[in-house]
Structure formats: C-alpha cells, structure tokens
Length: 293
Image (cartoon, rainbow, N blue to C red; front, side, top):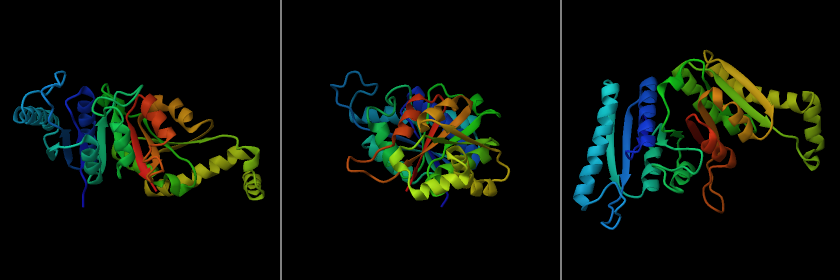
C-alpha cells in the first residue's frame, strides 16, 4: 500500500507553512497529499475563538477554510493528488490516527518555546510521542529557498547501527529525493570511570582511543545506507559534546534535521526524548522525529 504524506492544518500560518512543505515533499516523492483538520464544536461562551456560532455554522467555516487551503496547494501543484478530511474529535487522537496511515505527518510549530499554534499546550508532544510514523515540524517562516542545493539533511546517529537505522533510512530517502547531502552526526562524551570494563577497554584499545572508536561506530552505522544510496553524498561528523548541542551547532547548514526517538512507552507515558525535545525547540529548520524500537 502506498501511503500519502499527511499535513495537519488549522488555518494558522504555521500549519499553512507545514502544508506547503508537505505538498513539495509529496511532489518530490511522487506521493499523494492528504490534508487533515481536527476540530471540536466551540460553545458560545468561547468568545475569543475564531470559530463561533452554532455547530452547523462552525462546521461550514471549518470546511471553507480547509477548501481554501487545498485550493492554494492545487494551484501550485496542479498534478498533485490531494484529498482533505475534516474530523470532529480530539486533536491528539485524530492526528495520531492520521499518522498511522501516512508516510509521514507534517505539522506546524512556532519553535523557540513550547510547541504552539496548531499544537496547543502538550498536544504537540503527545502527537510526536504517540505517532507510529515520522512527524515533521515546520516553522511559519519556512521557505522553499531553504531547500536549495548546498543545504544538508542532518541526521543524528547514536548507539549501535540498528538504533539509528530508521532515522538514517528517512534521511537518505529524503536526500535522494532532493539531490541533497546527508550529514550524519554522532556526539560522544567521556564515560564515567565506573563505565569502563575489561571488554570495553579492549575495544577502545583496538580502535586506538575514544574518538577513533566513535568514528568507526558511525562509519559502521552509515555503511549499509551508503551502499543502498550510492548517489547520495555523505559527511560523517563526530564531535565531543552532548547530542543536542552538537546537532544544533550544525543546524545552520541544514534544510532538514532528523532525530530518532524510542517508540516504547515508559511508566510516565510516551516521551519524545531530551535530544528531540531540544532540537524541536531551538532548530530553525524543519525537524523530523522518527520513531524506532
């Protein structure tokens, strides 16, 4: 089954930028575009709401706004297959369900603070944490020029090769569709003394030290993707520091930042992870969060 790229819209500038980004990506990948709007009837007392009146009039305004958004997309991309769904129900449940049937879900974000706009309060984090597919967050000021040649797809790599396989696959597939370079970033820190064991010391000794060991680790993780995508240029970036700080240090060269998150739930519920959290709040480029086991 071919999955569409799905964009969540609500009429805000953030969501309209996300819709434009999703449409361009759908064209590049030869996929259909699905537009989803989740809404709930507002009571007359919610006087600050942009949608007021009875349920029928509210529904009419919502459908009209979505129709206008779709019209703008189809004018820019007349050959793109676009469908739209207006769903009355909770935003989190609606978007998580939409993500399950999508190649990726694209949403708007203001960044530089809590994710707001379409993603009110904790809704954004709940959607990212609960989605089974990649979720891309796009800023209101995102422009097509940011996808110009020379800007990279930056992807974080950590742990063993299988730990980052899903994020690397997403980054290489996106780069192949755009003719872009992939920069694979692996951050490392000095382990505490008690973390050393005879086995780990032997591996470090064979590698020639900590930094050479990290370079060999990232090379091993990237190797199968180099072979699968031989036409995609790759830069392997190994730097000492926290993963979030190192990724943000190269964000200025990125047209897209890709980070992974563990898909399992913890005792306190689903979480997006500290690295993804930091990058989502501070990177100026769109950010893709890719779940993995």
